[in-house]
Length: 95
Image (cartoon, rainbow, N blue to C red):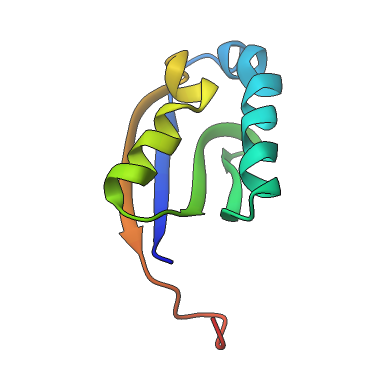
């Protein structure tokens, strides 16, 4: 199944991210339980969270965008900007 990355930069103000984090993690846990997450985690700068990088399996780009649109970080405008783009694993070998 194709892989799609969400590459996002947060709006200024870490408190808004922290306030929405429990709902975001619940959303991510559901995707993980369904076996769709290949990678997920914050982008950090000097130990502060400044964005997110998430890679999921999806049928197509529209499916990936719809899945990411359900994320509380997207719904509650935690991200200043984000892109969803198809990616292809090269490393580690065997993927």
